[in-house]
Length: 165
Image 1: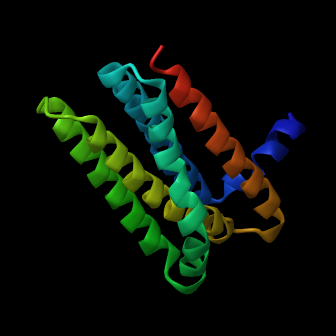
Image 2 (image 1 turned 90 degrees about the vertical axis):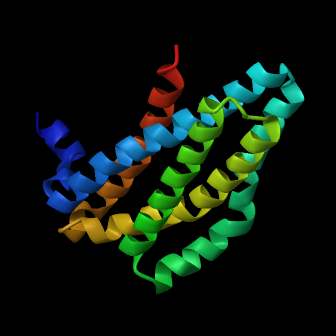
């Protein structure tokens, strides 16, 4: 029993518990959306090449924008930056849902929105990771909080990829 308490000791911090809960929902939603966009492009075209283009378009912004995001996270209010990135991600998801529901979705819509989501994530992920430090009350729990944050990221990815089945 002591081992289980040690694994989750960072969750004693109220702010970190709230952060983990919110981040869990956000990450599962983001990963589900990435899977859905790939699936949508494949259903529209049947093209493995375009499927790869969607995956690439979602990941390539990280190469260019993540260093800038780290600088912003160090200089500006991280909480405000996270709220902005989450609102932008919600707007991006709403636009995607609108074009799909309206029945006007085309491959270029999905690729463009995939790039937009990639840019948002390129800023969101480093800001979230640097925000963990602020959420833990006790310094000795910081390592545990970082490990839980990484585990949450990977668990959300696993859950999101399993839900559609």
